[in-house]
Amino acid sequence: MDGDTCAWHPERRAGVSCQRCNRVICGECMYTASVGFHCPECAGPIVTGRSHRRHRRTAGSTGMHHDDGRSATTAIIGLNIAAFLGTLVSGGSLAGGGGNATIDFGLLGYGRVRDGFTIVHIGIAEGEWWRLATGAFLHGGLLHLVFNMFLAWMLGHQLERLHGPGRFVGLYAASLAAGSLGVMLLDPLALTVGASGAVFGLMGATLVHQLRRGINPWSSGVGGLVVINLVFTVSRPGISLGGHVGGLIGGAVVAWMIDEADRRRASRSVGSVLTVVSAVVFAAAAVWAAGNWADPLLG
Image (cartoon, rainbow, N blue to C red; front, side, top):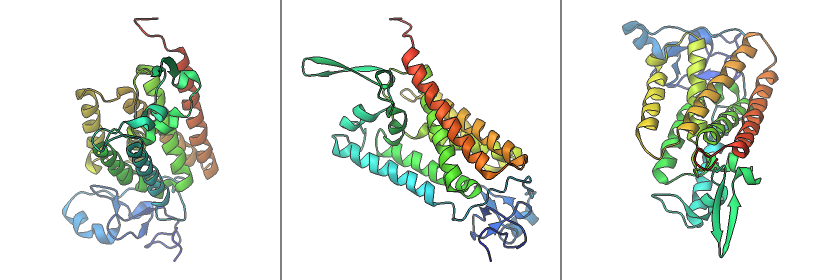
């Protein structure tokens, strides 16, 4: 059987797998689970005992692809782990990250460092545009890395199954850029690291996809996940509000645009282009914000 067809309806294309048995299922065969979806067989005893609802996916939004929804997600997680090891090599620590890699590649709108007797100006405003991306692959300690990568895996491989690896990478990049824009708008003088902006974007995308398919995000657990992480963001010092909220909004907006394109039966390449254009627009806006931000005290 074709890996892109439903296990119960071979004539139907499908792009989501059952969370329990990993068989591919179409929209008619999808039953919401605590995380992801179950097929009719795995959901059978649950459906008879609870009011789990069957969700039909809209035409054009099937998200066909030819892998198991893990290749791009795994690659992204691998890059984050490699970057963290680089942080340790450059003088960072397991508990707090840091090191020269964080200074050279962390997200920063504008800053000054001392090099001997010379003051060196650094940051995106000084032409170091790579910080928009590299800062999202560095982390402030092992716990920070593990938490972000757990969420990236949990949300990422489901979204990758829905969109395919190419479009998923575009969605991740757009969320990352939106998070960087949020930081540049609210606190460009803070050296910021972490994949949280991109991960919040995956939360926002998942929330939009579920709402537009008639899935209750509170039943699926995604709604609670978003609320808990937002509360954690505003209640603890040292956490980037701009990065988290910017990523959340950016991921939600891009997911909505993809869904609209799919609903209108546009080519799948349209959705891919939308993710790339969104990433470029968010990144360009972040560069502009870094160069035009005015310190409320110094002007």
